[in-house]
Amino acid sequence: MKIETSNVENIFTSIAEKYDILNTVLTLNIDSLWRKKAVNIADIGKNNKVLDLCCGTGKMIYYECKKVGKSTEVIGLDFNEAMLDIGYKRLDKSINNYKYKLIKGDVQALPFEDCSFDCVTIAFGLRNIINKTKALSEIYRVLKPGGKAICLELSTPQIPIFKQIYGLYFNNVLPVIGYLGTGSKNAYSYLRDSVNNFMTKPELRYMFKSIGFHDAGYKSLSGGMASIHYGIKPFAIKYSDRNQ
Image (cartoon, rainbow, N blue to C red; front, side):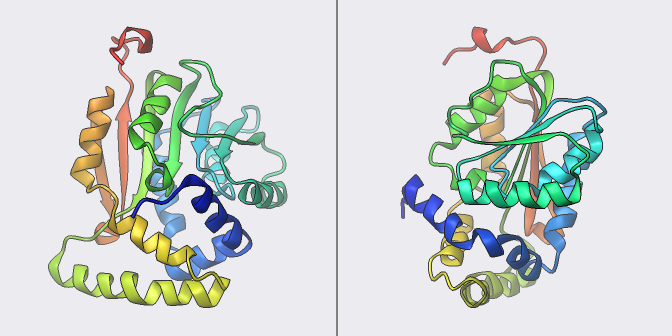
């Protein structure tokens, strides 16, 4: 079922206040470990320019600021004003001596110049974007040559018995817990459906390669419940030289 961007925004607005705590409960806090792993794979260094897309309440930005240091600004972008407002409140409490900026924007039309960032991350957001090819192309465009793209996403386990147990939890239990925790009937049903209808890990790796990323690959996490996809923008090809 195709869902409009405005409907997705309304869903996230409805659960913004409880989004982080519900994620912690529903994943037994494993989502924080996944984010840390993704930032480590990104290999972010001091003073690197980093952009986090679909930044939500800023969880990735917290870890990225720690990597780049206190003198370099990390930028987060999200289409949902409510999530950004909560992100500022929580980051101001946890890392107010670091530099960060959260802006409202569209991942499919990033408001940045070509070759602006050393690393671009997106966590649990790509599946919510209508035109995923356009989003990855924009990530490619704003990356510097040699820069790395990191995409952390939920996925479906492939180990037979674990796949069945996880499927029962994810498809039946999770939406109920989400509803009880947020009062939203649609939010966690949408989460379930968006994951079930998302690309497989090999399909997303192929999309990375088709955009132009080199060394595209992925790392499965927690038996395949999530995965980190990555790719590097090559030095040899300039964005303006690529066929669109």
